[in-house]
Length: 172
Image: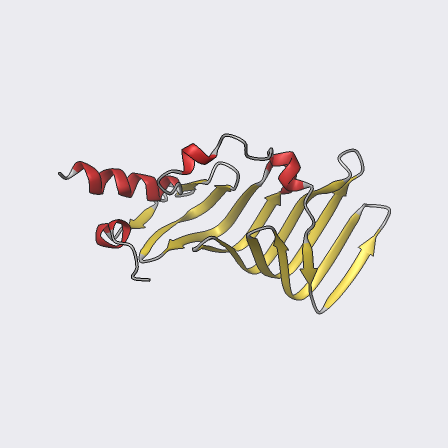
């Protein structure tokens, strides 16, 4: 019965909890999710209406639905065509939290209308006792999956998977 632990580990690496595929039907599109409000708090804000951008600095916290982004600096670019925030660039102590998962890096780009986050500069994804590390981490929010790459010049991805932690559910 080694197949079950291996399958569970593969689900973790894909970032997809069991049963997630069944939830795909009837879900809103990435564009619909991307048009949801983004609540941002920071120490300072500056707006540039010519470039359609807003920059937040100092203890930035941005929330959209169940995703929270923390960073030292965040620049949000607005798309007039889509009438929504198109892209968010985060720098410094970046942390993204969603449904029991936490990703960290030095930089991140959130493609809001695609519901895709690319973390770079040494990225770590942690869920419970399990971790994935690499140079770049791409999180596909709508698909509930992640891809980690090791980087250039032979960089490798490192995974620490605790099969016992995957299979056991915490006591309630």
